[in-house]
Image 1 (tube, rainbow, N blue to C red):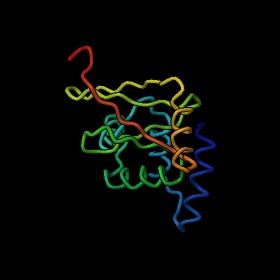
Image 2: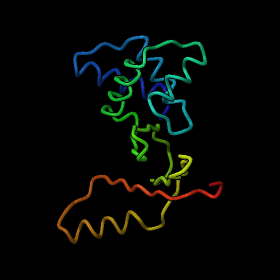
Image 3: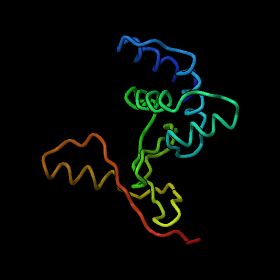
Length: 142
């Protein structure tokens, strides 16, 4: 999703909640959308601080949560005790595999997974909307 589209979606979302589109929210939005990695709120805060952008940790946490609610970010729980975020990209659905020792994260695509999930949901008389699969292991380096 490009930044201009994300701004429009986020502004509309905030307005629907009676909230304002502020400078700190815009800065967090820009940093989150431009991230090419899976990041936690703390990691994004640290990255912004290293670039001389000082926005409170609490604001980053709240802004990321609202961006997820607005559909601008996806969240993933790798079992590290906190949520990671990623900006949706124009690519096929993918899963994540994480190393239990060092925390490295790798994106993987599983052939025919969508088809298998749709089939299983149909057998259970469900229409599946979304799914998340958490795969963990030990990476090659560890």
